[in-house]
Length: 401
Image (cartoon, rainbow, N blue to C red; front, side, top):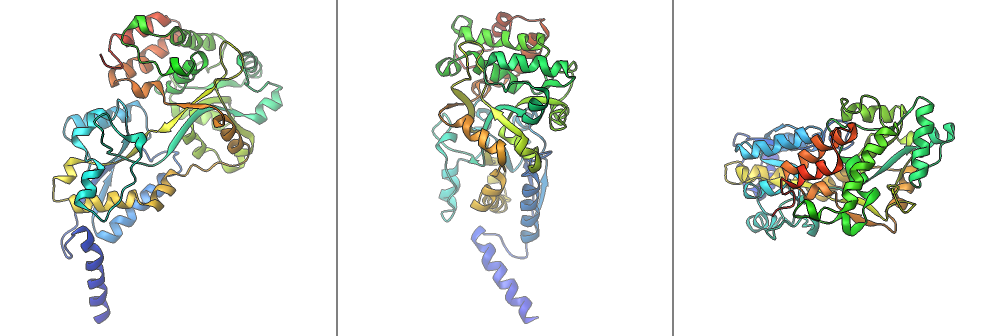
């Protein structure tokens, strides 16, 4: 009994840092993230939540799902309806985060109220209002993944320029292998962004036109590239109706030779396969070779919402926020394990190239969804021209007035 009393006193002392009264009933917190599905950090995320529940007696109701446009829209809709969670893992420093800022707490305000806490502030996540709201978890890059063993078996050239890419597409098509796995119905993002890199230099990729007349010619050429790849047989017959989960499964099963994707795909690649997978920069449509840029950045982080801050759950939410963003958690959640040829090729892809952020991240939500979910599939199918595509997007003022 005496030992139990001592332990209780120690536990109260530990929790007093967060002003949590011992003996009080636990509170229920709501969390949302995209640590789900094939993400290698999904288990780590659940482990952190479970440990927090065990240590505090609080309950965490998590609603995490694989990141896609539907998930992104559901998060934004919940915020618009006043139904946001207490802690959110979401995009930052872009068009997606702008609607959230009045309903999340800047880090300097949290630190002022809890001076013993020191959250890492990353300049890449500073918003237009000059404040930083999110604690970043992982950086990312995007590229062209290839199964090098399939290339060797079929005698296809590695995609080091546009001609070799088209030749490889023809060879894989002749061998009954889908050349490039893609879903044009829900995640055409990587194809759209890579098509821009195939045609635009860094300055053009980072252009923010105010109207159709200012849209770079290279952006029009990029849409024609998507149609060219479709006509060349680069994609599966069901590319317009399949889903990203199925196309990724197709690539991982080696039923497809290539896939445009981000560094997060590596978390789904078995370690034994990493020696036969490589990632390439985007071949240029004109001028030969590959782009001198690659897509990357720090795009997502944890937020603490005003809903939690202005409630009796504040201390409990701050403690969970601190546990999710301490150095050990950030390392484990942000670790993307690479090895072998995949690691070496990812290093080569980034070395000596300029990193640029995805074009979609600079667009407002309506314009981005029209571009990706309406225009890209129509352009690929040949039912919309490049000019019609950008006319529709620019009519929505994607980069502001």
